[in-house]
Image (cartoon, rainbow, N blue to C red; front, top):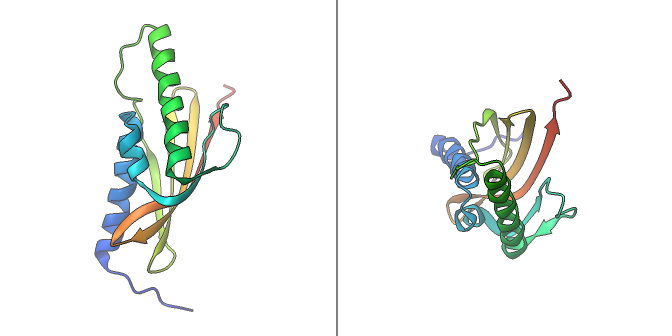
Length: 142
């Protein structure tokens, strides 16, 4: 078996990168979200208006902006004054795959739905960035 040589700081930095990404989503800050991705990142979001794989920061930013506008509109229609999505991620699991790649998986329960997220992070210039991100939502039938 190949041994992965990484510093203990990498694990901390990976968690910090994931939590920064989650905070950026929660605060609906498009620029901050996009900054969490590699330039050539690929993303699959569970938005009905993005039924395709998004490639690159530009496509990701456009879709994320649309998603945040939709959420703001829904909040307004429901009479909710909210500046965050109220995300409370749990079950964060990090697996170091190599010196430059790590896998992060977490859940984000919200009301009657459960967001399942997985991200492949890549170390770029000593920073951990999301290189591939898959998001899916499951709605409870209870």
